[in-house]
Amino acid sequence: MSETKATGTSWTITIIGVVVTLLGWFLRPGEFGAGVMGFGLAHIVLGLLDMTRPTVRTQ
Image (cartoon, rainbow, N blue to C red; front, side, top):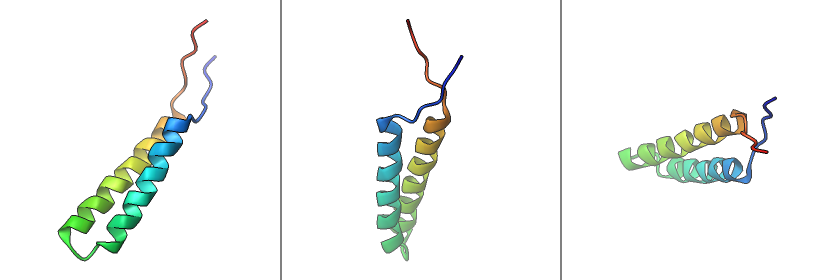
């Protein structure tokens, strides 16, 4: 039986993504700000996807 459990790493990646996305939002009028914002959004998506991945337990 597989369980899904969000680990601390998943939450950390998601929170870092939120911070980087907000930084990109404030730098948004330029291309650099758009790139930073996209980088942060990618981390949010990857962190949330990692939370849905089943954990593997060894006994």
